[in-house]
Length: 218
Length: 305
Image 1 (cartoon, chains in turn orange, red):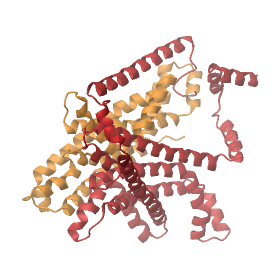
Image 2 (image 1 turned 180 degrees about the vertical axis):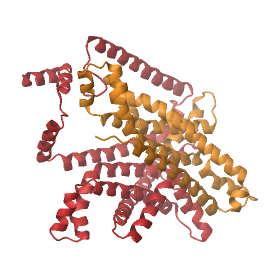
Image 3 (image 1 turned 120 degrees about the vertical axis):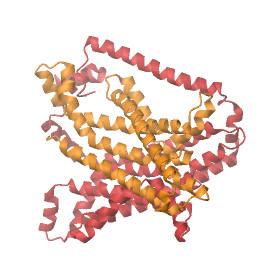
Image 4 (image 1 turned 30 degrees about the vertical axis):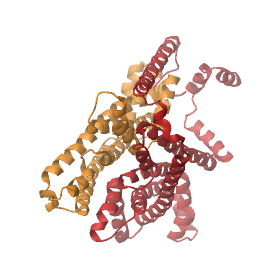
């Protein structure tokens, strides 16, 4: 337990940074993902094309390489300097946005065309077709896979460790490099694993609860 | 295109869509233009930045790094498929003393980030006296994580099969092993093939985590290159990124090809068409949209009349 109580300051900093990357990366992913997802189902062919290119390019690039682009590449461009953490948040947000977009698209596709047609047939205008018939159904089927995306996002925050961002996975190096800190790499990493297992189990519990609560009978 | 979101566009909607298309093009051009301007302004297109790529031994090293990436990917892919199979069989066992621990192990392996697992194998194990090469740390971590994910995929595939398949197997006198091996698994694997290959794409991308634990794969070499003369950081990232994208697109292409090959037998197509009629999936809206779509649509419409 020394490895925890002897380094409490480091643990709290690392946990804070992990959650910071998770929350802000998640917000960027959600906002950008909704935009890209809307583009991918829009009636405008060019917008669909742009969305497809974005998703295919970014999704087939390893997250580590996206980080590489942002953390090492961005400072080369001579733009206003940003901290590694901010660049990492941008990298993970832009990467995860592709998954959010795909989940949204798949969710909307699970709604039957007949549902919208029936809604139009009884004379509902576009706004009501959307808000009363299509989107509620799409939203419900989107929630479970969306939670999976966010669980993946949480686990992906560890990639930041390779880019000098002091989050949980980077703790091993930090504690190792300080000679007077208690704990060996094995202990640190096992505790990091425990923290992630706890957080992931919490999220999958939430996922299961929401799934049961909002299940649609089709 | 058929979408639940949009009606067949009328004259006003068509005009609005044109405006939206123009705005999209302008926005994309603005972003690309800005990026290009910044790249040009900061001298990223200068010959000195691309100089390293004129050496053939640099390309030989890239090939070698690519080989390392593929070596880790290939073994990890095979091992994770095997592990996934074993875990899936364990989770479907009738004996609680097998099922419960295997379920726990699967959930655990899925919850630990791959990088943390790699670090545990590479930095953690030496503490207890086991020294591990980066290659094995990468392969074993990928195997553990992707194996547990694939186990869930196999299980979902088997559980999605109609109950009659299993019952028929037992009815003709097969044991559980026979039902699994001859009836359930082949169907589950076939149904889940696209998902399995998608997971292999993830495995391929995750080999790039190896550079954090000093495995000399593509990204590791990109980092090495970017410290060379002229510091071609973005240039190496572009070149290596291009290689990754091509590799992943090839894998996804294989997935699509497999899907077509396994699914689109002529019989399946007929079945699919019949099913579509029954399920009201091919609707008049589709036809109307096709009509608005130009030549092909008009021809379709005429055929219909």
